[in-house]
Image (cartoon, rainbow over all chains, first blue to last red; front, side, top):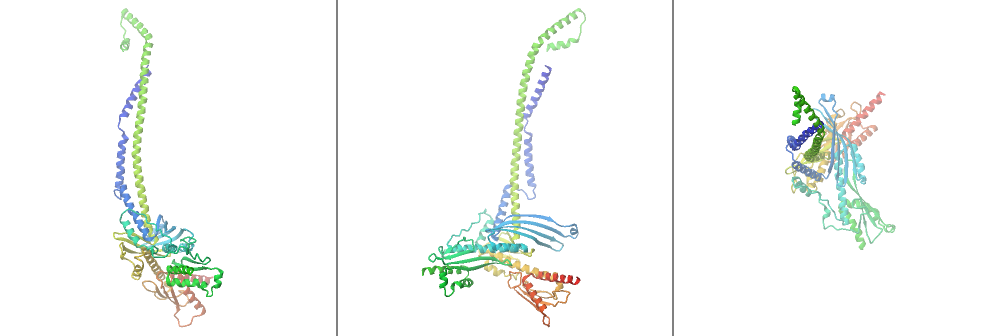
Length: 326
Length: 300
């Protein structure tokens, strides 16, 4: 019985303690509200000032609009960028107050339909008088790779470590490609769908981008007065290719093929190069006493110099077209 | 309880037979009780047992309640914490995004054209470089209005800014900027070459380097071997195309009165060709290297 009494006493004591534990207000609860306050304090103490998510978001929005503006201004869209810095200053250099830093940059984005990925190294040497920055290594990957004119240009840019020339020539190259596509489409009578830029939030940057867009290349082919020749013009490889064929459906066998290449020279200059190829049945060739067909490519070049590209192409199309009706 | 009290007082002995009789009585009653005790004890034990049983039940119940209570407190604490952490993670991710966008805005300078928005438009910065060496930058402050205007700029006066803006500014601002880029980069490159010639190859020059501010007309007298017996040549480089860093016209002449020998003539022609195809300072670097080679041959 004693042991039972002992047990009974022990149980009673435990029960009293448990009862107390149930009734007590949650001590940790107090701590959480205290903790919550200290997080706020941390943010308030932040050197950039009071940062609520709302403020951060609006600042981010403004920055993104600025990015959209720059992208519209240059025609180049940078999507990813990272940088690593390595301090190469030796103790000897520090004594002479010379600082040597190697930066590794990685950059990727696109310019219209061409995407690029760059990695380059920048060596910065700062002495008392001046700062010199030299690109010591450049590697470029571009897509799509079917623009064969570009691969040679890319290796040249890499060799010369000429980053700015790369972007400059890329811009002009793309501009020419777009112009070629628009011209081909215009003659074929295809509609041009220009992708509208995404509508950013209404802010200063957005307003600037809109005004900027007024000063971008006006699309000539939007002119409704231009004539279309859907049957005569043949784009066997699509409007983005370098070839446009001119046929006459009532005169099969005859075809004029205009090859419009876009070349980049040694200095990074982008130039169009147009050639005319003739496809003519053997009989016609025999009948051609004046050798018109033979001299066609040369005449084409001359015409280009006189009328310019669009007018020359139109005159060629018209000439083949009217011959049919004779 | 009375029993217990009485029993505890048992220790005291009283004198005489009466006392003895009382003791015997007590002993009998005690033994009787002892015989009875198991029953009551049992009853008591069973009463206590039940009580313990109930106490145990209550204790277990309370234990469970306290556990639950503690668990709910913990849960609410975790909820508050996770709310805070998700709030923090959101802020963190926004901050990270912002740093990323800021970095990309900075990275635009590597395209050659970068800019900042201003209250009236944009300030565009054009960077120049030659052979990987980053050179000066220039700015053009544009007013975003129709027609687009240049508010002010740092383009040198000898760059045909008016011509370029007349052609492209209103119809194709990208073309305008990249064309300006071309001119500025070419100018920077030519200037760089001329500067390098003056600073690094002074020994090769027989007189001062004559240059214009656009650095597209250079004239100098040089010796292919500074110490040697070679004749001084006069070089005149003209860069008609302002978007190139290589000359369009090169004339290398001999200033002396005697006629040139065949080898000298060959040398002169070779030099002319070099000036056409290589940047100026690189031509002189190759002269220097050739000189080194000759020295080596003399030694051996």
